[in-house]
Image (cartoon, rainbow, N blue to C red; front, side, top):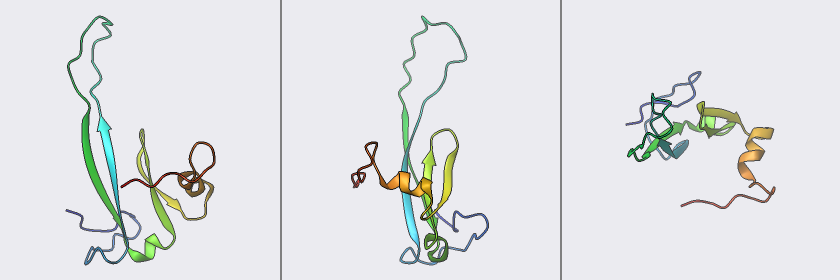
Length: 99
């Protein structure tokens, strides 16, 4: 259960999801074999998990979130070059909305 704003400098408590912005990311994790044996067969399947984060209204007015596979969730200021990258696809066209 979400308890507070994901921004560590804010940490406002969640009273209602009607204020702020709720983010959901699908995280896929895989296990890495401890062995360097190339011939070893792995029967492990990727583990998918949906994770949610909430930005309070004040923080959502100036920031968004970005999921970086190696670093996790990052706060991105709205209007920054990073935020513009989120809004455009690989060809610079707007990214398709996901449902």
